[in-house]
Image (cartoon, rainbow, N blue to C red):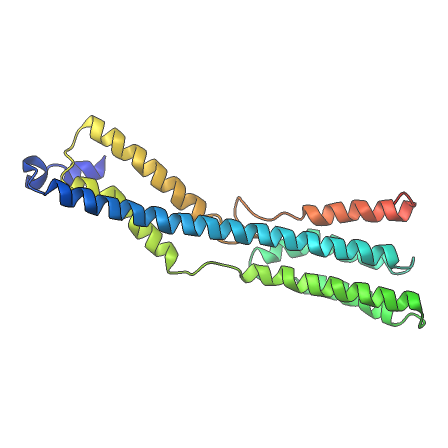
Length: 228
């Protein structure tokens, strides 16, 4: 409404002196550019989100295998590590970093296994822990997966241009025009909102949750009770 009130009463708006063909072309280019950048950002963010979620389940599978092969003295340490991932590390990953206490929890598992008497079982546990370390590092690397920064101000700038273009180019001030421009503004605003709240796989309203690890604790309990 404010945009129309400001620009919809200019002499060009009243007289309609712009070329209709030029206006249509410029409007199409502006809108298409906004859609292109926004769609790229949404698709890229969604891809990063799904990749990060998949990596949490990769680590969960490695933990299940490690727990299955672990002896009775190692299993509580593995549960402590998974609990730390859920309770502590997911909060720090939202800020793009690992949790030092969770690293220490996994290192304690490794140190405990290394101190066990040499045997085929210990060798298997060490192999399983190597897989846990590898999948954990891949998961932590996902916290740095963000899309190129310049695209975000570019998207916002194009969104503003889409809203400003019509009244600047000649859309006159009126109720119907205000409703139409408001609808366009709602669509543009929704696109911007979605992109800005999907820019990190572990933060925002749409993010990876620790569901893989809560399921892992359930699986641990099944293995411990002999119901596997």
